[in-house]
Length: 200
Image 1 (cartoon, one colour):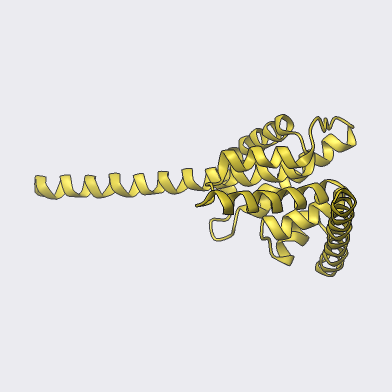
Image 2 (image 1 turned 90 degrees about the vertical axis):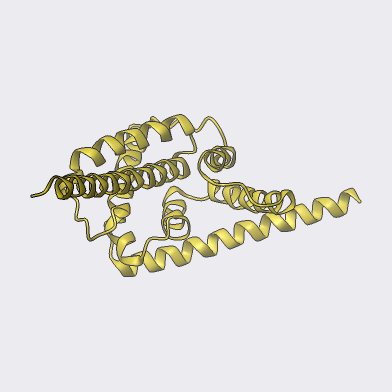
């Protein structure tokens, strides 16, 4: 093979390897973000969420070669997170040192790009604050199924795999959780309105 062809082939191989490395790093980054967010949403403690995310990534790298590249790795990641969180709950080692809402604000600052304008940013944060406060008031199972569907965008089949329950149970549990969330938000809005009227 002429020297030029050898150099060109080496360059193409290097470029392909670089693209594979970039793709792997991008996958790992998304997995780490998803792990941290779910742990934070379930635990309400940033330090413990980071510990769970770190352990999840250790397992991710350990099993990476065995994961099916044709399937989304996210449900597997979230199942690993959920198992660790359940273990913490079982051992009663969850330290909810802070409300869920400021903890999620930490996540937003670390991983999410800011909104384009201050007014839009303030409105978005206020809506987030209301939702996170309501989620924190819900049972762990209701909060869990809501965040898997509405924040992590899992399908019903993926949720059933993560939660190890039938799809029909996923749908009925999600319906009840959404109804509960609506009731909590409506009750808080009514309480705020009454308080504003009394103060006027």
